[in-house]
Amino acid sequence: MVERSHQYKILSIVMIIANSIVLAMDRADIDQSLSSFIKISNNVFFGFFATELVLKLMSEGFKFYLRDHYNWLDCFVIVVSTIDIALENTTY
Image (cartoon, rainbow, N blue to C red):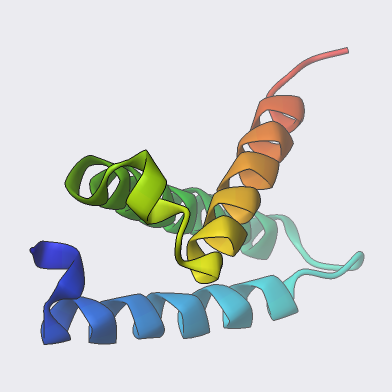
């Protein structure tokens, strides 16, 4: 399984750290280019983590997926991120 390989675990850790750094860069008084970089980066991270969730669900099945409480956290973050992205792209 890809999501269980050593290289994939290292990639996941690197992506989590990079995502944390990008999230820490976000503040109220940033210029447009940094804001664009953060938005694009967040979409890339979302894509990576959403793909990870789907791959795990496909390989483990829903019941087995929910046995690991870290997966609950991952699923919650993906659902909240999906809502955030949907609301961000909605015009009022």
